[in-house]
Amino acid sequence: MMEDISDSFIKKVRKSLKRGKQVHRRLPQGGLVYIDRPLPFLVLFRHPAGNPDHATADFAKATASYIISHEEQMPALQELIRAVAEEMADQFGAFMILELLAAPSADSDTPLFRVLGPEKQLPATISTLTQELEQIKISGIHTSVETASNKALLEGPLRLMPEEELKKHSYLMLGLEMKPVYSDSKTGRAYPLLLRTLREKLSNAIKKTVFDFLSVQTATKPVHFQALGRQAVNRVVWRIDKQLTAISDQFQFLLLVTPVNNNEAWEEFRKAKFSKAPTFHYRLMPVDADQLKRTLYNIPIEKIDDPTLGFLFRDKRHELDKMLTMLADRNTPDFIYSSMQLFGGVDDQLLKVAEGILAAIPEPVRDADAEIIPVPEFAALAGQEIDFLKAQYKGVDSGVDVRDDVVGLIVSKGRLNVGTDAKIPRHRAQALIQHEVGTHILTYFNGKAQPLQQLYVGSPGYEELQEGLAVLSEYLVGGLDQDRMRILAARVVTVYHLTKGCSFTDNFHRLKDAYHFDEETAFDIAMRVHRGGGLTKDAVYLRGLVHLLDYLKQGHELEPLLIGKIRQDYIPIVQELIYRNVLRPVPIKPRYLLDPAIKPKLEQLKAGISVFNLL
Image 1 (cartoon, rainbow, N blue to C red):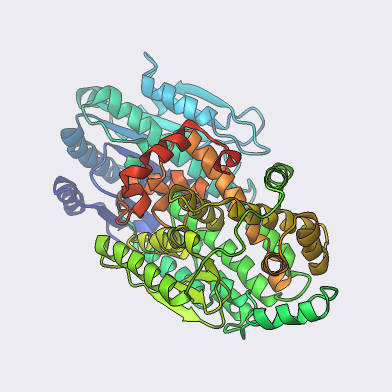
Image 2: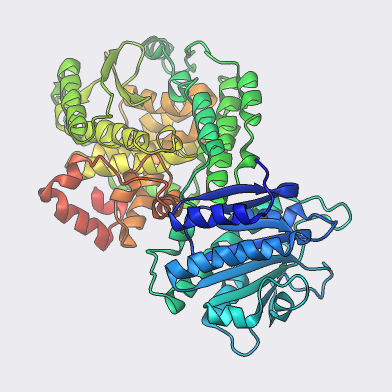
């Protein structure tokens, strides 16, 4: 509903803020008042008279408290801002107004940013803003920052309030003039990618500036600058979150790229005396990749003003696009190219680590007569571990399915699938249960406990951290043996040679002859890597473990990584959303984090050890 800036309108805004409520009201000609909750700052943008500038207005929308209006709406706008400032200064002890302006020229002499502040002194807040702006780096654009007087904001017909009033009420009035490099000078149309990048960086700079302002001028101390971001999430975010999840839920990617005739293929390969690659068969495709892509790109992610959530959803859309491309290209030579984009390949450093492990353990060390746990017994043990998770969080709706169309163990949609022919050594049972249940199922339901469904569906590239955590859990419960490490290293070497053009039979014989794997194990490794047409995912186990050990060595904790299916560089995003109260605390912890006997191992990991120390 569009409203005029009347006395009645201003009273309603003031009343909402006094009660601690959100203000979200439209103004004439596309203006908007959005104040997420009572906050000690306001970002203002006024469209120039007769010449609306929607690109610059977009920068205000990335903040938690803003007004977008028009110069023609003075002096009613002046009264609205005065009312907001008075109410917020009463609550916080001080108030900051930051007006955004587009510089009149985009020529080479114009700085990228010009900070307008008080003349007589340079408050620490202005220094903070200037320093944060100087740190904004965008390829191809020179970051230059100047400071100037805010006199233009305090004088003339467009002034918001006189300087005496600012001093009397502890208000700080700043201006931020931006060189309009983000839009075409002739048409005024925005460059969307540049605008998106710049507004995200500017949003953080503003939050850090307000954080400094509060620290210096008031007794209010937010826990983190990100706590000054939006807490309320509007309906369009939840709708898009559900739409992306609905697409993700329409197919089970790993099952669709895993052969259903593994036993028959092995027999075929053995009878051919390992000279001819076997023929693999796959499940029928339950979706039309082209139609799903159409639906995927019809989701209006560009409508999300929140830079962090917008990034999260665009990242997920990109991953789903790649997965659908892979499904369409399944069993063709093109499959591997999307796989490398999605899961990466093997760099020289990772290859060196893998070859080092295989050199350190040149022969299998496992007892050929090791006791194999019966599948029903293993399924029962896994079920008990799921009950352990349920005791912590009633939302755990999981179970174990024993299936004849599954090879080994696969977790899908929060359930554990166990192959009827799975050969699991008894001494490895608990390690694999922590891998599958204590990591994959746990993070699935920790993600499900969050308002954002992407936390359980999985952020793009989450597999590396997931598998790193899962393998580490095997180590913590004492089940990561040398043969398991040999297999993880062999997968990396096999992926490397796959990307260099090696065939199934080449990789099989390398595993059997050069690395001394038995025939069935060599076949299993080669099948996993060559399935679908070349799946590079199997390199993420060792890569994830190496990166996770480095993460722990830097002093970080394991628990935040268990909030859902995220990748390591999502930690700042997750932490920001926790500070903003968008995400909730982790409800389920794995057994190994609750076991005092495992604490010395965790301390050892934080002290810093390499993969070779785990052998």
